[in-house]
Length: 238
Image (cartoon, rainbow, N blue to C red):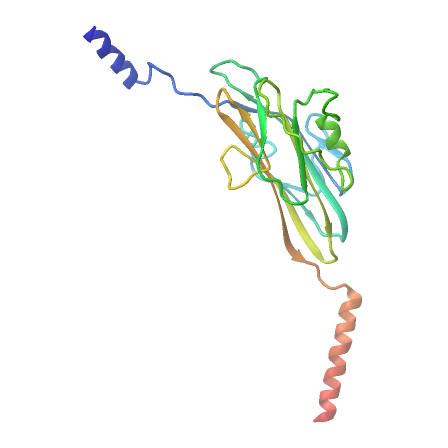
């Protein structure tokens, strides 16, 4: 008995008695974006890439295909109504348990003003939750937000879509950024969870005003004229 206990302790010390949990492998099945730049859908699965006006980080959409994590930003500067939405179909495969991709779920974080979202099985045609997630993504604009429904029941293949609709005043430039990370951020909109491996993906969106426009030529000439008039009056006084 003592020899058995000693052998068990040695195996445990070597890490052989109980293998550590293995995080799931992150795979990208499909990614798509749509914005008010032209209203068209740009989708990796269909080979229509890259979205106009999009600025990708080094890891997204493909220099690190083993993770496919990172961010993409869109910048808007025209006055009026604007929108942008992203669709993300990631697969989390737990190689250790060989559980495939059909045991995922999704949960809400915080939904900032102007944003809406949805998570669901990408192939789900359940009539109790119409329309399917990709159809909502294709229809998304300022008048057609997502229905803010999240699939928090395990046993599915999860996809996530979310978007931002807003109005810009004249002269304002706004940067809208989508971020996908496997590190817990200070805030997020949605998260995708593989309960068996413990792997989590966090989806976040931010909007930031990054500058104002310069006056147009007519305004510039008007200001120049006023300046010259003031200088002329000052000279007369002296």
